[in-house]
Image: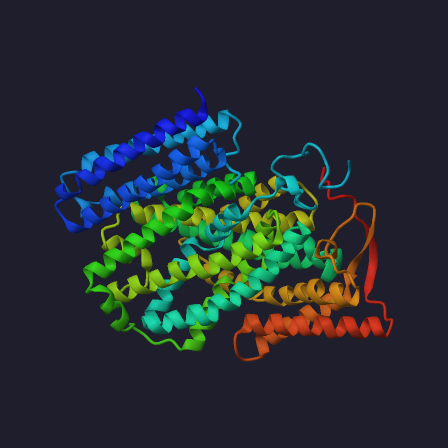
Length: 122
Length: 456
């Protein structure tokens, strides 16, 4: 499948996930976990909107840069979120969604590499 | 075509143009440079330095020290140095062939970078990596200090073997992560320990003068500023290199160092990672330590391998393995003997490293004054250009003498040693070059023909 079309789908999935995370914000049992979730869901929302535009316009290097940024930040989020400090009822959902997003963008970078897009030349 | 910029097909994909100009087709833009410079020279070392500052100064004092002293001075020095790398496309040490001659550049590069950064600090960081791993997983033999130092060192050698591509890769991944983790740590510390007002009113546990703080912030980063051409030679344009350096000095560096100061002031311990663990950041702290040390040691070894290749002509990727193995074995030995003989060795490499600013002063004088005004080379791309088949000197006496003057000034004149050394070497180089040229005294000795930087 076309790399840009696939990236577009991935960004739409991320957009939906970020909306879901924003929707479950109030279920967090402590304020720190809530702010942390809010930060990552807003980050995912903004980068998905940017990504939809880049993929729509066929701007490969910007899609790749966006993918790197998302992987980096989302894994940092996951690394902190697994600590007991952020315990909350929605944690399993948050970790699942952000884990899927990370996997999606690793796969996308692999596809970009297979499509001969320079994934290390930003 | 034989010219480095026009050659089709590379001989060794991982040599990274160690002894020649980086072709324009292999260079990168502002975003790449910004990420790579920030992640390479910043990261964990800046966090720990922030911890030390927070132990001796209040937040306002630390802000003054970082913004007025450290950042501005380092932004200027790094921008001057980075521009030279982008214009010439040469590594720091190959560039040193102009102010010091080929032999002078080889000896200085080997003594000031291969031994200190490539072997010394690489070994110390690998050992420290082993210590941290052992603290986190104390009961596993795989994470004993010497074992973790060995496999950690091997991992760092692998990324250095690949070269700039690996550095870019690590930077894209590590830098945003560090920013996120420090931001979360900062916000947690502020919200758990009395708000932003508490940061401004918190008093440090011990005392440090403002001058000492400025000296420390400059000293922490001065080596990185002077060897910036190792990275900026991959810049498409000089203004990209300068913008990337200045931007990272005014945005990334103050954020990390002042973030660490605030966290330390609020939580109490000067070891920033301990504070972040206490704040409940768990695996996030492990990420900071492991990835931060990985990239900083990759840069240590990368510069070490470049300077070694300049001294002993061999492929840079092979040099990284050779130098890296020496450093890793040293780290494993310290781990096995519980840190024996580490302190004197650290003093030795710190002493050698303190000579580096003097070399920087000579390089600035040669590039920006002597070649521009005395030799009338207006085009900055031509000032440090090595052309295949052309003769160049083995020794440049002006550079050697000014380096010696700068090094002595660094030790003898009170104030910020690194800045004194740079300024004295800079002025001495200009005066000596002017006198030698006016009096028609020969100051360049020996000749060699540059063969294009091809290492077989």
